[in-house]
Structures are given as C-alpha cells and as structure tokens.
Image (cartoon, rainbow, N blue to C red):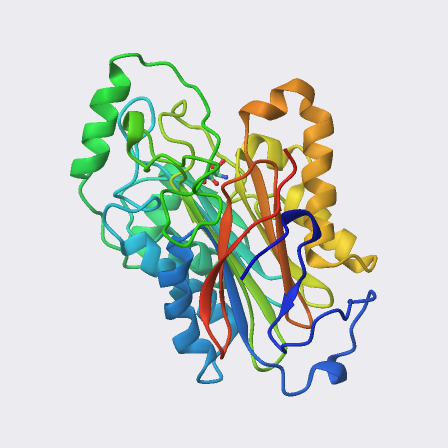
Length: 344
Ligand code: SD4
C-alpha cells in the first residue's frame, strides 16, 4: 500500500474511510464494535497477536493490552524488559503503566529484577489505593504479590552494548527509529541501523491501545527507558497522561520516544483532548508533535517523539517528529505495520 505520509488516511477497523469522530460518542453508537489493537514499533506485530487472542474471544481490552505487551517483555533480545539495555551504572530499570475504560490506572517506575512490570502495574491499579509505586517499594510490592525476583545479570546483548558504551560513557539521546524492516518503504531513503549498531538499542518501549467488542478502550506501556540513562531516571511511560492516557468517551493514546519531551507537553492526555474536540487520531497526534517541535526549536532535530491513537470508533492514526516510526495494527482482517507520517 502506498502511503502519502503527509496526507495519511486514517484506517478504521470497520473498513470505512473518511468518517470522523465529532466529540463524545454515545455508547449505543458502537454496539457490535469490531475489536482492534494497535501498538508501537515492529515488536507490536507479535504483541498484537497476544492481545488478539483475548479480543477475538470477546475478552476485555484491559486483559488484551496486558497480555499483548507481556509477550514483548518476554522476548529476549528485544527492546523492553529485563533483556534490555541498562542504566549507566549497569542496572536494568523498568517503567510500565496500564489504564482501563473507567479511569482506573496503575504504574511502576524504576523497578528492577521483575520480569513483567506491566502486570505489577496492573496489581497496583487493582490492589492498592495508589496509582504509582517506584523503586524498592515497587519491587517489595511485586514480591509480596508473588512475582519472582529475577537475576540482575544483563542479557548477552545488553552486556555487549554496555561494554561498548562504557568506552565513551557519554549519554547522548538517540532518535528512535525502526530497525531494518523488509516492509519499510522508507528503507531506501533512510538507512535505519539495527538496534545494536554502535552498541545502542534503537528503541526501548512498547505501547499498546485496544478497543474491545464491548466498545471499551484500554492501554498499556512498558519500557526499559532510555539506555545508559542516569540511575533513577524515569521517563514518560509510567506517567499517566504523558506516556499513556485513556478516556473511554473519546480515545486511547500511547507515546514513545524521548520521554522528557513527552512529559513536558502531557503528551498522551493532550492528544486525547484534541480528539475530544473532533480531531482525527492522526491530526490529534500531529498537533502535539508539532507543539514539541516548537518548544524544542533547533533541538528538535536530536530527539524523536511519536504517538499512536485509537478513537472510540476504532479509527487509528499516528504521528512522529522524525521519519522511521511505525506501528502495528491488528483487526479481524490482518496484522500489519504502518509507516507513520512525520514532521521533519
Ligand atoms: C522513555 N519513552 O523512557 C521512553 C523511551 C522510548 O523507544 O520510547 N523508547 O523515555
């Protein structure tokens, strides 16, 4: 499919092009909703399959977005979870968040040695009066909930990357782009390095949002954050309203890229608010990305910020600051990657 990045057409799970959400959608409008799940980067293709197992059987979007990203957390040699790159002191620290259709939300940050931070985030949501637990406290909570304390040993690939990084020991944010991907139409014009080139992962996060057959939205996000970050650094992914936001009357949004710059604009929440005003998912994402670009001025060339959004009707869209971002869409018809439109 050829995609004009600047005039990208929103695809819809219903297969109907060109109808736009105008603000609030009545629950009765979406009876017999076709489920859909979308997630960031090419790792989303596998993650979507896990989510689809839940959605296709009439399961909830909440269960789907947890199960989906757990697949990525499990993938050794992938970008999130315990196999990912460590902080500058050599420890893998994980952030995750989850949100359902009733504004229930939970998150963990700076969590170490726990394989499925997304499930700990869900327990925070369901079993505590809090929204967010961090560090040692989050780990203690996880252990008390029966999660196993894993080894602190780095994966082989992360150890290699870390040794490489130690040679220079400078923190230089990278522009997140997709690894070489045979389906990428941008491949020729943009030579995407593999995740391991220069000893650096290319991106570190999976974010997922889903709409179930009951017409409810949920979202999840899980990440190792930025590789070689300062110890204690927390990004946007566990911050509700920044890395993830769900408003069941409007839509669900998740972010990836330079977390600091997503936090500054309350990114995911801002995208939801634009959709509430009637903007399409892609246009809502674009408006927030452009705000980041304005704020960052010439520094925008050094960072990546991307959003994916799904509205109440199953229309989806994305926008990124730079080329090289893609997202995976699973409907009853297919599970495929879409190149995101971008700003610069
Ligand atoms: C963070 N947003 O911690 C995450 C990083 C990311 O692909 O998305 N990497 O800032």
